[in-house]
Amino acid sequence: MNILQKYYPLITGIFVFIIYIFTLAPSVLEIDSGELATVQIMLGIAHPTGYPLFTLAGYIFSLIPLPMSGIMQANLLAAIYCSITVGVTVVIIRMILESQVQEIDHIKPAKQKSKKMEFAAVQPEWTKVLLSIFGGLVLAFSRTFWLQSVSVEVYSLHLLLVSLIVYYLVKIMLQQTNKLKKYWIITAVLFGLAFSNHMTTLLLIPGALYAFYITNKSGKYKIKHLAVPAAGFIGTLAILYSYLPIRAASEPVLNWGNPVNFSNFFRHVSGAQYQVWLFSSLEAAKKQLVNFFSYLPNEFTYPVLIIAVAGLISLYKFNKRLFTFFSVSFAFTVLYSSNYDIKDLETYYLLAYPIIAIFSVLGVVKFIDKIITQKFPALISITALTILIVYLFYSNYSYTNRSDDYTFEDYTKEVINSTQDHSIILSYQWDYFISASYYFQYCENYRTDVKVIDKELLRRSWYYDQLRNDFGNIFEGFEEDVTGFLTALKPFEENRKFDSNKLEHFYQSIMTNLVKFNSEDHTVYLAPELVENEMRSNQFRLPEGYSLVPDLFLFRVVKGNEYTPAKLPDYTLRVPEHPNEYHKFMQDMAVKMLIYRSMYELNFNKIERAEIYAKKILTNFPGHRLPAELKKKLSL
Image (cartoon, rainbow, N blue to C red):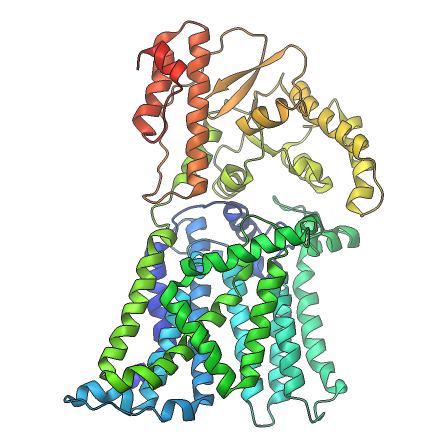
C-alpha cells in the first residue's frame, strides 16, 4: 500500500500505457499519419507549422532498435506521451486537492460495521490518492485524448507539454515561498518547447497572464525580472525552429514549404495557407461551438459531465484563483478554436479536456462530502467511482481501439500496386493514401518506381522543387507553364494582389501537360475524385486523343478508345470491426471503381469479365449494392 501511496502517479501512467498498448494502431491511419511518421524517420519537414520538436524527438526515438515497424514505433511514442500526460495530470489534481485540504479533511466517516470499509473516509491521504487517480483515468479514457495515444500525431506531445505548463502555473498560483522566479523560468522554457511543437499553445497565454498578475499584485516581481524567462523562451524557440531552414537546405525527401529563406520560413511557421479557415464567419463559429457541446457526452459520458459541473461550482467556492485560471483557459480554448472552420476540429479543444477531468474530481469531493458518506459506506463510494471509470472506458473503447486497423495500409499498397511499373498517379486523396504513401515509399521502399502526385499541392510553389528532386524531369516539355504559374503564384503567397484567372489558366495547363508530356514514358493514372469532380466541371481536360479506362482503384489514361484489359480484383482490404467515415470512404471508392470496370467490360460485351468485378462487390463489400441496370444485365 505504501508503494501505491508513494508512486501512484507513475503507477497510473503505467496502467494507462498498458491499456493504450492494446488499442495501439499497428500501421498508418487517416489524415497525416504517414506524412508525420516519414518526417520523423527521415528527418523531413512536416506541413505547417513544421513541428520541429515533434520531428526531432520522434527521430531520436526511431533510432532505438525495437522489434517493430517504423510506423508502429512512431505510434508507440504517442502512447508514451499520453501516458506521461496522465501521470502529470494526477499530480496536478493532487496539488489542487492539497490546497483544498480543509474541504477534504472534514469528510466524516459514515457509521459502518466493518473497519475495512472505513479506510477511504477516515484517511484523507488515501482519499486524495484515489481521487487523483480517478481524475487521471477520466482524462485517459476520454475519447479524443485516448485517440491521440493510438497513432503518431503532434497532439500527443502537445498534451504532455501543455500538462507540464499547467502543472507549473498551478504550482505558481499555490506557491507561498521564494521559488516563483525559478518556476517562471521553467514555465517560459516549457512555453518555448510547446510553441515549437504546436501553435495552439497560445490558448494557454490568457491563463498564464492571469497567473502572473495574481501572483504579482505586490509588484515584487518587476518587469526586469522577466528578462531571464523571456530569454529562456526565445532561446528555446530559436534553437528548435532553426531546424527548419537548416534541414530544408539539404533537400530532405519531404520538404514541405521549403523554408530555406525568411519568406518561406515565416509563411510556413505562421501556417499562412490555413488562415483562410480561421475567423471565417460568425455562423461557422456558432456551428462549431454547438458541435463541441453536443459532442461532450461522447467524450466523457453524461454522469462525468454532471459531476464536472458540480466541481466547477465547488472550485469557485474554495479557490477563486484556480477557478478563474481554469475557467479562462477553458473559455478561451473553446471560443478561439470554434472560430477555426475545419472538419477535424476535436483536437483543437484538447486543452479543455484535462480541465473537465479536474472539475470532475472536485465534483466527486462535493458528492462524497455532502451526499455519499452521509448515507453509504466509503467502499460504496469507491465502487461508484470505479463504475464511472469502467462505463467511460466501455463507452469509448470500440471507437478508440485501432489495434486491428490495417485498412489504410492495404488501400495505399493496393492503389499503388494496381499500377504498371514507373507510373504516375494524380490524386488528392491525402487523408486516405497519399499521406500514407510517403511512409511506405520512402521509409519501407515500397514501389518507389511509382510517382504519386497530389493535385492540390500543385498549387504550392515548394511542391515543384519537391517533385523535381524526387522525380527528375517530370516537367520537361512544359517548363514555361510552370514558370508562368510560379510567377503568378508569388504575389498570392506573399499576400499581395494577384491575378486569379492567370493562376487558374496556368494551373489547368500544367495538369493537362503532366499527362501529355509524360504518357509516352509512363502510364498515367487519375484517381476517381479527379475524374468525377474536376473533369466533369471542365476544370481539367485530357490531352486530345486520350481517354480513360477504369482499372481497379484508378482510371488509366490511354490513347484511343480500344478495349484495354485490367488486372483482376484479387485484392483484400482489411476493415476493422467498427469502421469510421474514412474506412467507409475507401470502401465506397473501391466499390465505385468495380462498378465502373464492370460497366466498361459490358460495353465491350465481355460478360464473364464484367461478372468477376460485380461479384467482387457482392462477396467482399456486403453492405453495398449493385446498380439496378448492372444487376439486370448480369442477372445477379
